[in-house]
Image (cartoon, rainbow, N blue to C red; front, side, top):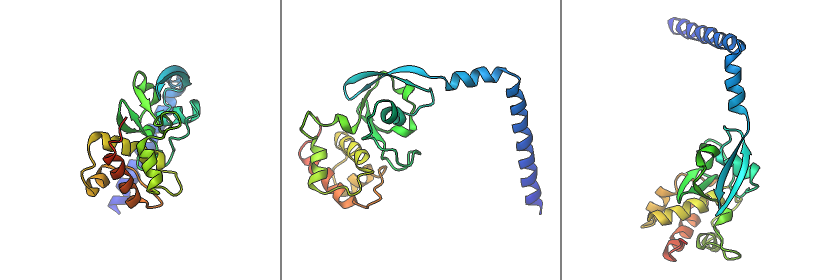
Length: 195
């Protein structure tokens, strides 16, 4: 009974605090801040070797800027919480989950998406090995897996199957193609797959 009373007291106090913030917001000053925070701004992103100017809200993630403003839909929106890795891209050569960073924070950085790996009609060696080893089924995670594999090889984390699994563990595959993914990464690493 005492625990419920404490919980109820905390909830009531939270409600009173929220009401106070709402009343303060109605006073006027925070409205200007809120309008400024949600207004659109122009930013410049260097993606796949091309510099592009896009208009975004300051809170727009890099993932949404790539997909919705730049039509680079190869980068997938999976969980949108940084848990699945489907949105993995390379920023200055390092893998990041693009749903966890704001586009405005990546101005001046060199961003590579899955669309930027191939050289003309020639696929990147990691892409070729994913096809050769049948390392995907539905394809939802494949772009993120490929981008993470490129980084994994570049970082030198391909000494064993266990090491590959460990360094690719931030990318989930709902179809459970993990053995094929490991085989593809290992084969691409043997080819010296970083260009």
